[in-house]
Image 1: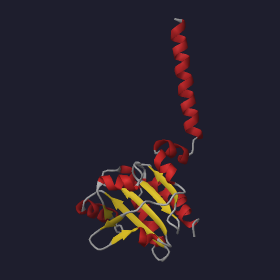
Image 2: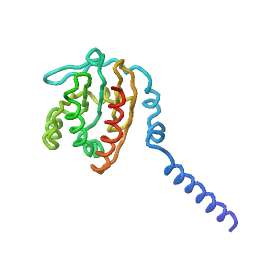
Image 3: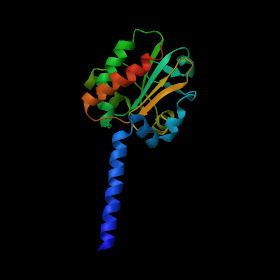
Image 4: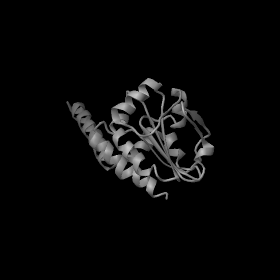
Length: 185
């Protein structure tokens, strides 16, 4: 009987610690645990790449001298879709700034990209790359992943994951991503 009490006490202690930590942990701390390679990329130059769509291509040379926002998503990702309206608003706010570049990247094919663009009325273009290339470029982290580079091509912010609730996802884009971008100008 005594060992059952010890096991129960141990379980309650562990569960309480986990709950306490989860309440205190910031989004960045949790994200760093979920994707340590992405966390380690902050402060480092962004990797070499070249991606193309039907109308244009983009590579590291196009990023020089610009604040760059890169968002990785795919059609079957509920948190990715939850933030699409807010990302569209972010794009519209920043599209007139010649020192800003917005890159949307997915492994989805052209038909899936069109469905998402039509569903959300997206004003920004999306580039498609292989799943392996998307994983390489987002440091092997989850989806959605947002990366912000400074004018020197250094990763200044990276976050993976998000809410499936559009209101929470929109709040994150407006209060965190937009603020992070603005802080670099």
